[in-house]
Image (cartoon, rainbow, N blue to C red; front, side, top):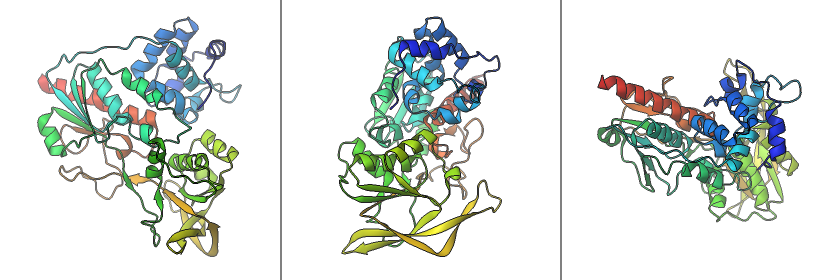
Length: 418
């Protein structure tokens, strides 16, 4: 977690902003926070106004103030990036949310239509908030006993304080949102029959397997590992050699949590190279400073097991081959095998959605659900978002899906009433 800016530091940082008329930072932000206007209010000694402006654009401002990967959004677009460094927008967001204490807005259900939201993660939270602000009564169905999804349950224990998420959720207490927590939503057909429209964002919960012998029962799920630590029942890894398989941000969270759990040595195995690794640079740098080793251009091909326990992982070197895909494809290099000692192997290569076949969503062979720019699915009145439709995997990107879907639902329902 980053340190909070001091009032003097926030003031100085705000005055570095050039107030660009075309606001490339806003254009780069998935939820299009009006960054120059927000910073102008901060400059004008109106921190409450600054917070209200940002929260109106981003229902998860407190969460994003801590973990938004600004390096791939606003910071990358800032015109000062190559001069004296980009404006620290994320940290300014965090400053106003923790110091301004603007009053929470209240909304009433001024419309007769009810809308369902399936999934209480970032996409669902954002959609529910926007629908409530537009005057709709909303039913949110979340299978866990608390909303938040991956943000609450599957981030490294020392990377994110869950009270940031709870602060964002507390802003919705005055909204016409019924939270159905700890219960299944029922089938999509039933949901659509009981509501004017629905937003489907259940996340992805089924582990993608490595495809190696003896994997099931011996290799630990990265998502389950993180959740156990979040829930205070994490496995003690004191003195153990741990190998993590993966290459995304979840795998880095797993490695950092393994270090936190007392592992003597943590090695991350990734089948591509550092340039292809889809992670936030600052998280990668933190992993390196905490002793995590990375074996690039390698993949596991077998477990070494003695008396039912893992003793090592046999890996094979890979090389990248351009096959016209979005990025080079890793190819095995037979004869270039090596063994990593391991007492614990944790899988973090991704997850896939559980498909609801009750409604024809035209999944096809894709791993993600196809939707339009308005987040419409193939089923009438059903919209979708979050990790279900995109592998971008950031809170702010998921929130943008929810906001976009809410506005599309509003447009659909108001047009139908004419």
